[in-house]
Image 1 (cartoon, rainbow, N blue to C red):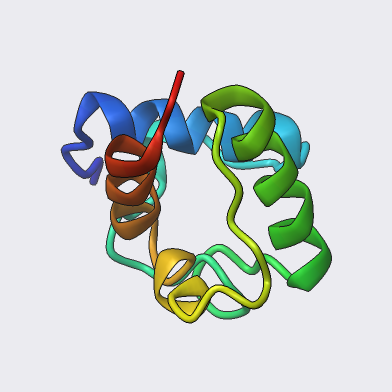
Image 2 (image 1 turned 180 degrees about the vertical axis):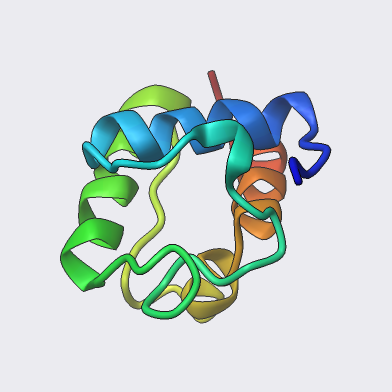
Length: 89
């Protein structure tokens, strides 16, 4: 079953799959499942790479000492929403 992704969620899912070379179909990523460990199975290095890609693509940084960092990477939906709110390009 394919979840209905918003355009930003789909764009974010594609960025995750492409930048991390995952063997996943972006359209099939559950927007509410965790990105880290269980769920999509990303590790801390993946999240660092993803943060760099987000910075380059959308013009804002997600730093490891950001008090919301755990929440930001909690799911595709939250990450896409954060990008939409904070993006500068």
